[in-house]
Image (cartoon, rainbow, N blue to C red; front, side, top):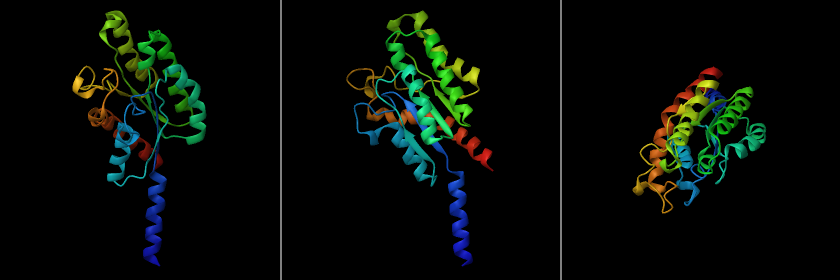
Length: 206
């Protein structure tokens, strides 16, 4: 009987410490061009499982998504899932369409504030766009992600595709989307920041 009580207590403790992680992204997180089980978000789930973590990962990423579209979808996602941690991986499609960086920054800041108002923590995934958009635009685009992180006090992955972007061996034939080989490298960029944020979530619950 005592052993059963200990097991039940341990189970309840694990459930209490489990976090809900919501990924709101575009094709990079939606595993465009491959089986969803091969994408970096699925690799994240597998890594957490290997560590016997009971965290729940919800991938709400949509290929082609923009910061404006993400902002429209986010309130429903927050109500539905009540995430402890949100990863915002958006902006690439805005950049490819030449949208003003100031608009992207406002949208991302609003998304962060909405999440924080519900008690969630946020990781902003930084992105870059090809140099053919011009130096002024590409610099402004790259700078908006750390600016969002600073203004909202959220965590930052400096460049999600570091070591991947611009390297043909890690890109699909279109030259825009990472291939299967790149997914572990993407997770490598996210993991240290996500692990640190999860520790903050867990500490807050104690």
